[in-house]
Amino acid sequence: MATASHRIAGVTMIVIAIAATGCARTTASSLVASDASGIHFGRIMVSVPFTDLGLRREAEDQFAKSYSGKGVMFVPSYQVLFPGRSYSQDEAQQVIRGDSIDGVLFITLNQAGTTAYRTPTTTSTQCAANDTYAQCASTTTGGYDIRKPWASFTAQLYDARTGRSVWIATENTRGNAFANSGTVVRSMANSTLKQLEKDGVIPE
Image (cartoon, rainbow, N blue to C red):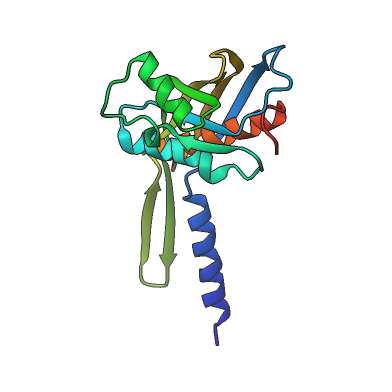
C-alpha cells in the first residue's frame, strides 16, 4: 500500500514531467480570395520544403495526422514529388494531376531563431545549532541560460486546377524552454489546419 510520502512523490514527478514538456503556441492571420467560395478540395498536397529531410517529413506528415475533418485528404509532397529529383513545371503538373491532387498548400519559412535569457542567481543559507556548535550550509540556484525557439511562416493554398492562390496566412510560433524545432513545426501545422477550418476553406 502506498504511503502518503510515496503519493506526494508520485504527484511531484508528474508535475515535473508536465513542466518539462516542450510546447509551442502559434498565432495566425489569414485572408481568403473573394472568388474562393464554392471551391471544394478533395486531395491537398502539402509542401514544407525544409532542407532537413527529417524535419520536412515530420512537418508534412503532421497535416495528415492532425486533420480530423471529412472529405479532404492531406498528402505529403515527398510522397508525390520525390525530393531527390528535379521536375520541370510541366512534369510536376503532370504528376500532380495523375495523383488527383486538386489543391497545393505551400509552407514557407520566413525567419527562425531562439530567444535566450539568463535566469537570476539565488543563494539560500540554512543553519543548525546546538549547545556546542553551529553549522551553516549555502545553496545557490539559477544562473543558467534558457533558450526558447521561434519561427515565422507563410502558408499559401493554391487551386491546382487553375493555379490561382485562394488562401494565404502568416504565422508566428513561439516555443517554451523545452521546445525544439519539431515542437515548432507541429504547432504551425495544427494552427494552419485550424485557420483553414475557421476560414471555411476546408470542413471541420
